[in-house]
Image 1 (spheres, one colour):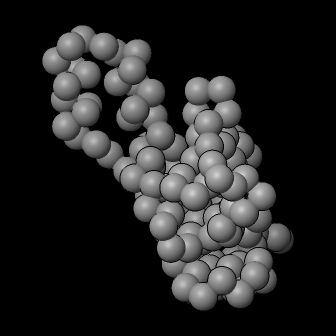
Image 2 (cartoon, rainbow, N blue to C red):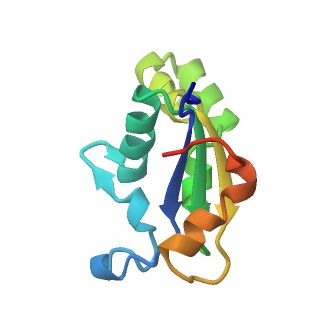
Length: 128
């Protein structure tokens, strides 16, 4: 019987040169699409497909990705004190989407190398 796929590997380590100069200071994955960063749509799609264990392969200067999916308790408290439940929900939502792990690619050696970085986390399980 085949194992269900629960893990997804998202390569997000590239420089984003096709989007320059916009990506000089902001990772391409954080560019907004309407009201959310593009990477959030990617994670939401994975979660809606039942892939709740996310391994994101990142490169240098991609701390914004980690920060986006992390909790910001000071902001949450400020929104709660204001009674701004709508914005509070949106802020908390991104940190509770999935179990997200970040791995550094190190040297940019291409897509195959980026996916290979996830081998310890994925193990012998199937992944998307």
